[in-house]
Amino acid sequence: MLKVVIVDDEYYFRQALKISLPWEELGFQIAGEAKNGEEALSLMSEIGPDIVLVDINMPIMDGMEFIQKAKQSEQETKFIMLTGQSEFVYAKMAVQLGVFNYVLKPIDEDELRSSLLEIKNLIYKEHSVKLDYEHLKKQAKEHMPMLKERLLNEWLQGSRVIDPLSSIERLQYLGINLDAPFHMVVVADIDSQDDLVTKEDMHIRKLAVQDIAQEFIQNTPFASCHDTNDRYVMIIGVPNASYYRMEAISEAIRKSVQATLGCTVTIGVGNGYPAFESISVSYQEALFALKHRFVLGGNQVILHSMIAESGMKVSLFSVERRIGLLMSMRIGNLSEAEEWLTTFFQDARTKNASTEMLFVAALEIVSTCLEFLDEMSQSFEHVFQDTAQTDIFQFIQQMNSFGELERWVRNLILKVIVHVHGRKQNRAVKVVDEVKSYIQSHYGNEELRIVDLAKSVHMNYNHLCYVFKKETSITINDYLTEIRITKAKGLFDQGEKIVQYVASQVGYADANYFGKCFKKYIGITPSKYVNNIQ
Image (cartoon, rainbow, N blue to C red; front, side, top):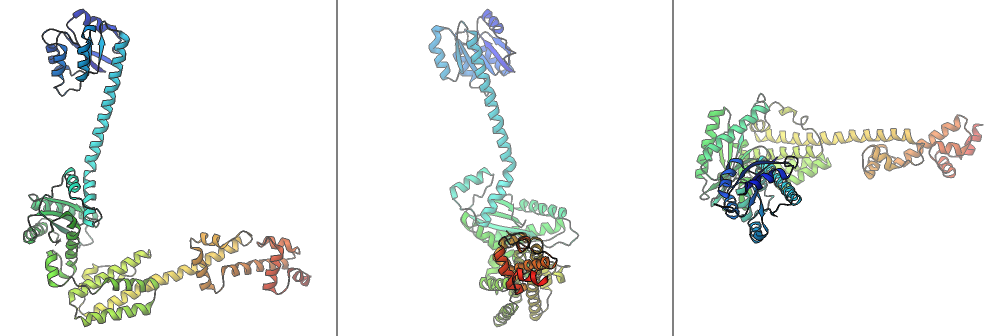
């Protein structure tokens, strides 16, 4: 129920007002009364009424002054002014102050009831809106971490167009402080774990790495998230582009992780840049540095600037070479793949490629093979069965010579091609068998079309025609006709003499066309064939 307070200096008027309406039936409760504004102010702080009925003309403190002072409190009380005709001008002023309505004395009960019900609906509506607003605020707060992760990952990937002004506003809304002249990205990733580490333990370790890292950067403007590969990424505000301070902080994080968690972490550090737009650049640099864990070893801090200076950014595996390798694997041309391999390793020898460059190239080739297998929806366990018990990167690093690496890479690529395209051939045989079986079951349907066959085996019309012809040396139409004529001949041999009936039984609506097809395959017309049998 809504609480109502009556403020009027006339005692008997207040009493009459209290019995003038069925207050409780209407959803109201008379919670108190006062004879002047001063008493009413004191009463409001105790009761916290929803509605106050107040007379304008009262001693000590009149209605106008009372409303002005009551409005200064944080209570959301609604006011209805009670006034005589001579005070009508003041009532209008009160409405301008925010009074909900005014009712003239002597009180018209219907008018008062109508005004109270209007104010009741307004209060409930405002309450509902407030609840909705609080619910939205709660939802926004609950989703804040997800929104933050999404925004930061969009920045890291470079998929969001950066507007400095709107970006700062969005960061502030998400509680992120990156107010610094330069920004630098640092990526921390736990080194390979043994098979005994459960997913739950791994998740706990990742969270622990996050907590440790934040301890060392808490006094620095930063934002952090986990990227799409669940690596811990820190976007850090720095006073200048120098990497020395960040190298020291990263090294401290690395040592603390090893000492605290009993596992190791490798940290890649990108370069510092003066604008938000370059966050994705620094992130890619940090990933590039982190990638060299597999040739330099884990449990260390790797700076992109140091990698670039050492010349290790040069790659034997160019974009053009990657495309060439993918094409030869897609086509399934073993000789072309052999030629690619020969050219690749000859080039590596000519350039006197370092061990590090060869290891990086081998990793990129492995990645390309995995990409191809995924593209063809094939499992990679069979192809990599010789390395199933160890980490692929450690497996490559343990190789002792250029020749050993070359032999392994050759074997890998050729095995991938044979694995994928050998399965393709098996699939073609299976599809042809399915088509033949379908025709054997539906040859009597005169509306049977090749498109129906294609749908039955979930294959494109043109591709099905190509596969069937390649595997059987005849077209699907020719095979269907052979089946139909063979079945018709069988019916004639069993004593059936009516040509039109036999034609309909084997899928021909036109007996004349059936006759032409029969003569083409058997050498004589159906009627002559029947006569010869007799």
